[in-house]
Length: 262
Image (cartoon, rainbow, N blue to C red):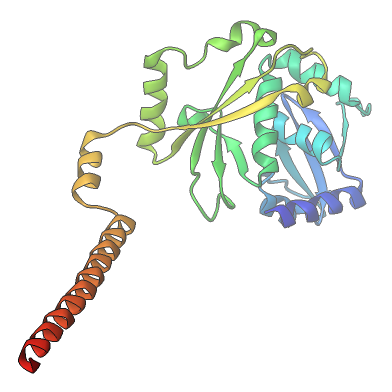
């Protein structure tokens, strides 16, 4: 995936791609780059009738800002064709979505680790993370972002109640996904500027339910490694026993031979 992202980054820079703000995201028009965008799993392709040369992709706010801020491979224009700067985009997204700083930090964190990140709303999560392209594999993680620190104000109470955590575990487990909690923490920073991103720290925690039945099965049926270790120990004990048996036999034979001789 890292190679695909690098190819996409270079191609978008060479083509001087421009994204136009639309709603809470942006629309990206590209020439001959639809395949790369699909392979990198960015955006959603929009069917456009009557225009074959250009392909349109709907980008979410995190996707668009990642291409603009982290990969630096696109420019962004407003609806009236005005080119937007980083500060203007940050102000726009934080004004329309208060938790945008921690959401983007989580998205950036996973994308830089070569995970494919998509919306997780249908699974009761913030994101879902795929190891490869979504067309090839199912997502492995249901991701919930939890801010932590005074800078986030009242948004810090997420998953602090056991019922919330159990609901999230049930929801992720019912769709065969592991719950991944990304805690975004900071001591003090100004969230009104994108400069805060370098001060935000991401902590990863995977949470699973303890199922007694499975634990009993694991105890009754040892793993291959445990079985192999036990077998090696038995073999070692057998070798030691055989070694001392040979020595004892040799000693007895020597004593008998000595007595017969004299």
